[in-house]
Length: 153
Image (cartoon, rainbow, N blue to C red):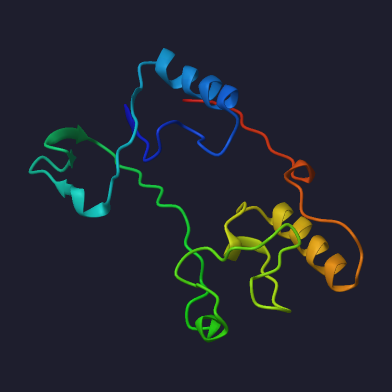
């Protein structure tokens, strides 16, 4: 089994220790880990023997199964945000109160890319509503529970 990761380490958004710990399990079970590898669907071709071949940087890997996890993109284009001076070409940039650079606009949830979990969106919404109502408070990652259980069958 081979695992390709686009980033320089697994779980790049987590603490280094968590990344190292999660990386240990697959490697002890014979999984090859290739970091800094950008993979796209057009690199996968069907072979004559009904398998799959993945071609990356002149390297070919014969595979019975290919799973591609592509991530998410925000769905904010076409809302007219650019007319307000908000860059909507990627995740929307917000401050700790979930405010956009344009006065009176807030962005919570997946659209800002801070964390793509519903519990995060809820915490972000609390920070935004609190700000709108004049309360002090801000979004803090410590409010978001996280857990990784590394298993490989």
